[in-house]
Amino acid sequence: MAKKTYDLLFKLLLIGDSGVGKTCILFRFSDNHFTTTFISTIGIDFKIKTVELRGKKIKLQIWDTAGQERFHTITTSYYRGAMGIMLVYDITNEKTFDDIVKWLRNIDEHANEDVEKMILGNKCDMEEKRVVSKERGEAIAREHGIRFMETSAKANINIDRAFSELAEAILDKTAGRDADADHARIAVERRPSRAPPARACCS
Amino acid sequence: MSLHKARIKAFEDILNKDVIDFDQLRKLAFNGIPDEKGLRSVVWKILLHYIPHEKDARESTLKKKRQLYLQFIDEIIVTPGGDADHPLNISPDSSWSTYFKDNEVLLQIDKDVRRLCPEISFFQSATEFPCEKVVNSNGMKRLHKRVEQSVLKYATLERRGLGVAKLSSEIRRSDSLTSGDYVPLNEGCEAHWEVVERMLFLYAKLNPGQGYVQGMNEIIGPIYHTFANDADKDNREHAEADCFFSFTNLMSEIRDFFIRTLDETESGINYMMDRLGSCLRSHDPAVWDRLELQELRPQYYSFRWLTLLLSQEFSLPDVERIWDSLFADEKRFNFLIYICCAMILLVRENLLNGDFASNVKLLQNFPPMDVSLILNKAAEIASA
Ligand SMILES: Nc1nc2c(ncn2[C@@H]2O[C@H](COP(=O)(O)OP(=O)(O)OP(=O)(O)O)[C@@H](O)[C@H]2O)c(=O)[nH]1
Ligand SMILES: [Mg+2]
Image (cartoon, rainbow over all chains, first blue to last red):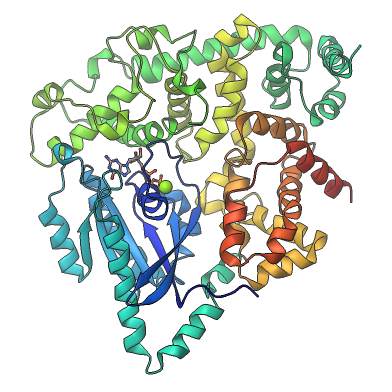
């Protein structure tokens, strides 16, 4: 058996309309690099990054989903196992912001009730093209009681911070919920992808 | 005569018959079509049922289809609904709303064609044969121009309620649309990605039930690349029209992969993934068990493999070689399943030793490998 190189494993999901920059955000976070020539995501992609929080090594298993409607059956089957979800919109594109409500509804329908959420307004390097003000982003986040941040994958603004805050929120929850935190840890490690929906959807 | 020359001659012999022996052609093409003399291009056209088996009928079919395609361009792109209700004539009637709805589709296409095969320069380079009516229109008929406007429309028209007249004078380029090297070319010129954009838009307009789904760009790309590099000038000149109809025929066979509501049907993508699952299970129970145990579902990797006919997993020349076999498959697309299964078997040692994360990574980023190795393995599975 492979040696364990981490204390906890968190499964995260990136969702949002096509073209908002989900793949770029993830690439910036995992490889600290930005490129404009990404092919569109078909179905689902996957990256791993280990971070350290409060002295614990946390392995983040991050799923990058395709934005277009057609892929929703495939992508929503990943919601159930997710412990944290990033909802991304593009501050230069009104429609992607309007659709955040739709994505929230999707989460309600398919994800665990206690999943940690965070809204990201991406491409904040493009101030001159901005059509969604920061205040509107904050307002919708407040309304739903969710964390919020503006990011730029291109200029590397708030990308690391967004992931560590989300991971920390999950950490708080994990520690708070179980009297015996060690128990939870073992459960998480043994079953990295305890995803019942996947079973349900490959009938 | 070298083996390669003999192969070329074998193809030529079949193609020169009055009536093609389709089975014979299929068998030959299954083992790969030579790059020379535009052979791949003509054989794909036959295998995709675009041109007839009778030699005499070929020319007239091509002529008819190419004419028809020009008509599509005229009616749908150059003068949709006649000049009278050009969308910049202010009156928010139904043609207006169609125009903007189309632009939403176009916006998606535009994003995707600018992300097509970035590892080669072909799609960013100029075509020898631009569509005259489009490229000499002061930008008016260029499809990507329309999307630049529609981005703005959303920003100013709906948010600040500005009039349309104001709108048109404020058109700016969006960075995200002109990023990378996929820049539009000057008046009179046209890049290959612009041609692909036009074909996909026409396809979406002519097949409203289906529209445009991401990934179609990856299906049309290799076909267009093949046709636009034909050795024959006349064929190159009409690569766009020929590609459009060949793509349309191919889509009629795989379109259900792209339709969400058909996922569960026998022609849908879930069924294909299940078949791959059973194929793997019967050929390598150990690997199957391992992936099962790790709860590594076929849809984590094979959804993209199957939907895109493997076009995102290999380099373009390899994709074209794989497609020779796929198109020549008598029971399209059985052989696709075998290829996918072969790919898994060829990395079985890694899979048996890897954890969940490294296995997903391996399958989602399939390592470069000699395709003939994969195809031979697939043929082995097929005949088992
Ligand atoms: N200026 C700027 N552009 C960005 C940023 N992030 C992404 N982009 C651009 O936005 C485009 C789309 O980015 P992707 O990451 O592929 O979008 P996606 O959300 O993964 O899209 P799908 O895979 O289709 O769902 C690319 O052309 C990027 O160059 C950013 O922070 N700033
Ligand atoms: Mg993506």
